[in-house]
Length: 74
Image 1 (tube, rainbow, N blue to C red):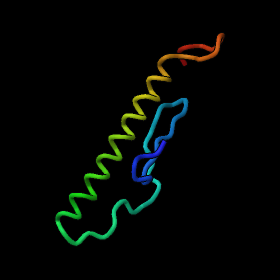
Image 2: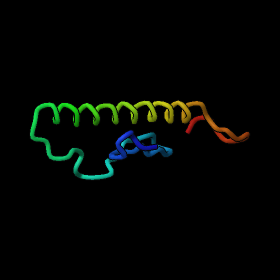
Image 3: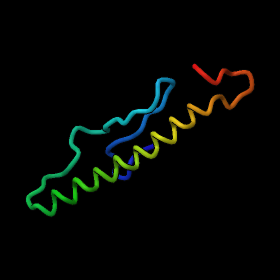
């Protein structure tokens, strides 16, 4: 899953979920306060979307196996 800006994405595995950055540059060049506020707000919204996905994936992990015979707790 990626965030709304496609600058970050959520990875999910047996050890949990994590947010990974896709690029080193997270904003463009800003020359006005309003541009800075907009760029940072978009990043916050992106992280919020990633947080929701992380919580969903962790909940899936906690719910246990989807297949009979697999252990629920690792």
